[in-house]
Image 1 (tube, chains in turn orange, cyan):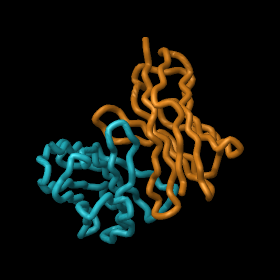
Image 2 (image 1 turned 90 degrees about the vertical axis):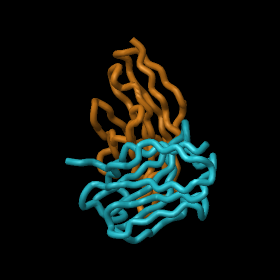
Image 3 (image 1 turned 90 degrees about the horizontal axis):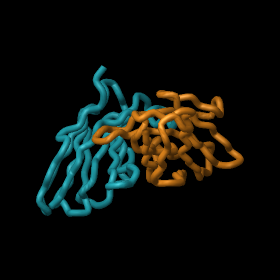
Image 4 (image 1 turned 60 degrees about the vertical axis):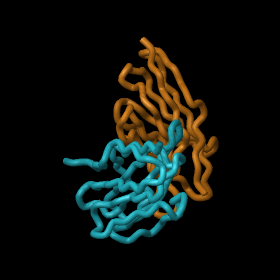
Length: 113
Length: 116
């Protein structure tokens, strides 16, 4: 089965600092990986996805992620944090059958002034 | 255009009551998913529909959970004889293609179920 592990349930950064949210995957087939963001009382919104084209994937709101097969990682980064980036971030891998998503436990990002 | 909508947004039920949660997917989307998100956790897959056919219900936690999508659009998740452990946010997602692992799933805002 395909799965992801998010390292760090809470991450705190200062406004303007680099954001790095970690995700490692386990998959028996080439993985398709996703990052979603969830704001309070809202559904999940897709930030970006890796579908085996370019290994560096650019998403919305200045986020990007790099697929590294050798490290089985798909970490999410943003050069400069904004206060509006404070939210819950989920890494997910597409399951082999019927494309259901297997999510990590999430990382809560706090941005301090 | 309209996104995925869910109703009600909040539901409080007494233990033992039956509840029905509704999902309106994006128009024309053939794939529909239900997920359960417990407090402080990531969403977990419950069931999958391709049009009106329920192709995977392996994530439904017990036979008290039942989902349907009779006309291939609106879906209802029903929970019978609710228990406290059913308290969670229930998320619905839809996507435009059938079973494509690369397709984007669009999520609704969820229904927060609290069982007292």
